Length: 157
Image: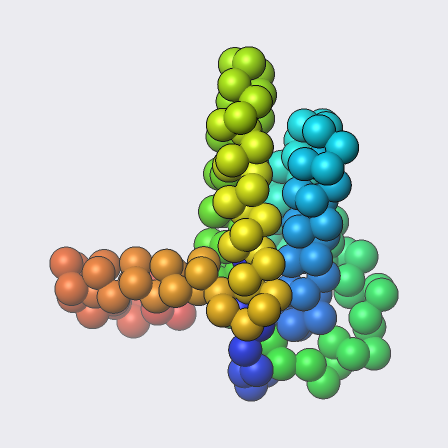
């Protein structure tokens, strides 16, 4: 669930080929889990996204693989803000985490609905509209309205 629009290179940003790989892995995994009725696949996706949420690029298996697979493409590719990608991965991890809880509580329909919500959001992102990005910017607008401008120190780190 990340941006798919073309943007200039952001220093320290996530190259868009890696963002697309992340989206593709999530969508493929959710579809496979639903088709084969295997919650274990969503568990694997949960742990993959959890590493990225907790540790950023350093903990992301997809970033590690994408950095090697797309090394040439990544050099000149537009990048996305790492905070935005982490926000999107947090949403994905929460949906997958709640799905795991639903499966453990013997509520598979709820688990599949939560997994399906992630699949739909990821498919829409691959199609060009990033729902997570929309939520990220809305969240920041509301935060600005409530708390005012961020301090210089906070905006740099």
